[in-house]
Length: 439
Image (cartoon, rainbow, N blue to C red):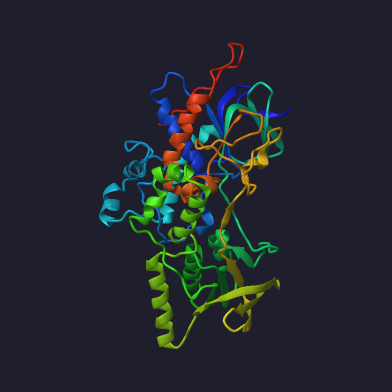
């Protein structure tokens, strides 16, 4: 028999995934229910066994590139008890943080904040649950089915919000192996490698923030190893986080982007790529350059930059990986044996419509899912309420996959849900579970 999370009850909302995006929605719902006559019932299905956000890149001392005020709630509700300031106060570090005189917490601290907030929703999250499909029930509702452990899970709701995050991307034809890594697994892989013989060489592919952080972390973690940074540029380019450029991530910019013609959307994406894509924090660029220069002065270069180069091939040899690097300047080929190669080659949003069964998503001329301004999937011949968070860069702009707008977007989706969710059809329907009211 299928396992029903709520004994056959019809929920208002089921969230697929429970990372920062749907956590932000859970917070918005909880705050709304504090003063509402009719609560909104929710449940979230998360594939991970426990809450986590980019654990593999929780490098000590690395800082967020998003200001702490762009947390899960503050831009939507400045007095929220779920804001980063409330977290600091509860942890007893508010004054200490203020004394640091920075908008940017470490990544480890921000992860602790996210975990602190997520813990308040443990009773409405089913961890270890893999969603397989979303299908209409025939009476205007949606059934979400999946697996948890060895058993089936089935939850019925009036609306579904898909927020499954980003998937790591490796070059075509390449799979992660023991010595071929995506940077999303950097920290645990480094810890594992540190227990064996001292590594002698690493190769890091990429020119963005994650690539530079990987180079820095490997260089500091293994003081006898060479680290080769391979990129198709002359060097790292600085991220533009100036005040005017950052306006592209403002909440209003999302709706302005949505309402603009396709050619303008394309121009915005191109003109402002240097705010987030294949760029590096200037302080990190300077630190790496100074370290590289100091090594040249000392006559022992461990930090090496292979400019205008690409990895042409890599082969896992068991105890090492063989890497072929080709220069685009003169065609020179260099073969290296390394202890590991790290691909900092980014992430990609998966097609949210992949879960649909018996429902068909409308597509644009490029085959991408069409999404309304209030983040609903456009469906052929159906008014089913399927919302999307995170896979909306083509419709809502460059902030769609970032933390910057989680709080405000959660409020936008909640407002749409409130206007569209019907009351229970009749009194014979099982009782709606009480709203979750975290302390």
